[in-house]
Length: 225
Image (cartoon, rainbow, N blue to C red; front, top):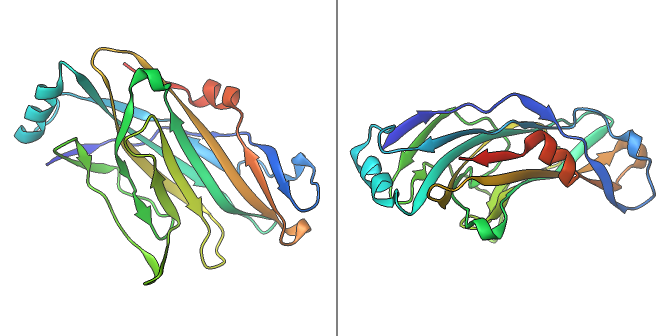
């Protein structure tokens, strides 16, 4: 196993716009600033020379002619208040399908609450697996999670966030993933965000907001190279 310390970058406020309304119509300007923050992704290419674990180095070396592997770390922060409570969220990373970029070893896979993970990441082989943390909540017939990874092994993947037990989403969650891309290619990716809020003025109504592709492309577009 090989440990890598890779912190996420400075947080960026993501403007989100009202997309769909369940219930009464609502002015967009009711949304408080700083509700959704995304840490600028920090990216490190994994090389045989850059890891101390012999097995991991041998694996990366054996794949070098075909695939490059990148470790990507970022954070997501949802901010709830007395006026508005975040009840659902989504962070999605996408690459054009023709690039053949795919996600591996998404972390966290499943968490029962939003909580900070360590900056230190343990990598193992095969397929450069990030050491996962698994926790569950619920009875035998129903498992609920505050954070769930989706789309591992695909070019579009990400995490969903859900409020549990009447507690709104609030706090920072570190996110990590290993991305595999064809060797030697420069690959551009994009991050987009969605969140659903319950505003105190509108009682139980929930309003869904989404970031625009241009906004996230300008603020959080990135390249693997």
